[in-house]
Length: 488
Image (tube, rainbow, N blue to C red; front, side, top):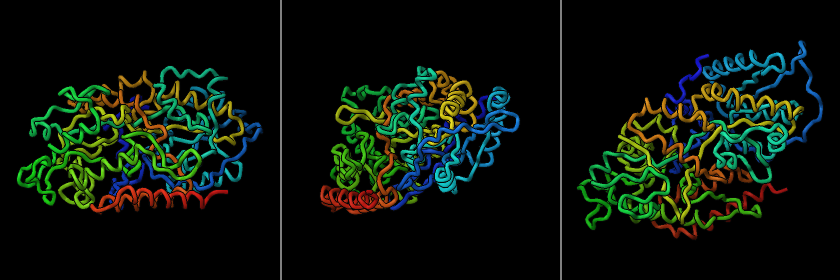
């Protein structure tokens, strides 16, 4: 096997596996929901409304004919079911079994992403659960909320070494009452992509690359400071910027900022990690998200430095690939966006703070073990090898960026060969600021709840005359109704 296969040939060529949502990212009802594209390189099935969690079964797994225990690895809920991926997975399994085949045998159970949710749900219902599932992202994990094994007791009993991981990433997979359901594997951090040519043309200093550092003029690097720069970087057809009284908002040819290819949960999360689900399970509107909603709404309809839906879907903003059009100065996005930046001379900087807090929302893949697995100790033992001794090879299978600190220097060096002018350390440092709760976390009645906030987003991005607080309150009321539809 080619031991460093691709490793970040396009820092996560997963944008071609974009498979996290299957196909090209596209705007959806004005909300630009292509962020799911990168969350995990394979189209996600809907989140289960009633997860098929099973009680653990204490049976001993049956050995194979030669007495070696088989460990079934379910592939398809996230990435992994494309033919080129399957070929690399087979090579990985061969490598693993050559080393440990006298003790246990890793066996692939590959299903297409389109059918993976239904197949796995059937397996849960029958009690014939796999030993390991993955790679899978946040949305995929929440498709079976409550169905995964809490790894904490096994990490302790098997003395699994966590020192090679950023503690923030360990915490990222500690999902409250569900426990430590995953360990870091592949990460797709976000940072502020900026167009150097547009900053140079405006005579502005670049945003700070050091997280938590001030802007060049000494001002704190906040979203208010970003707004100030973004208005100077927003220009109409006559060359007026958005700070000038002559500025024409109907003929804008360059925008200062756009959080592209994400829904409103993703866009607002940069202000603070939060959720529409309150502590009591009822729908809620977090204060930080209400502030983010107001900031973005004014940015579209009063200050004009953020494109509204009409502009986003125009040809001059590449029908949604706004930063890649070369006509947007700043864009908070993930490493996988190396897929699509062709129109911009770019570098990356730190995400600004809000109320003293920095959040760099994270996409990440991991592997999970069903709570109903027949031999959890054995399953964790094999998983610990896959994510430990064989982590380098497994990361290469998916062309991903490694969560293990010891593997990151080499990964960055290889990426630097492809992008010699980019400060890629910014992405590595972003891993200190993940969003927890994650912006793709589950909600009761997930599909209908998503429809509710997507409908609000469509209104918010197309109507300049909203009573915003009133509309946000209406959305929360509607969310609460759909949440209650699935209460026991």
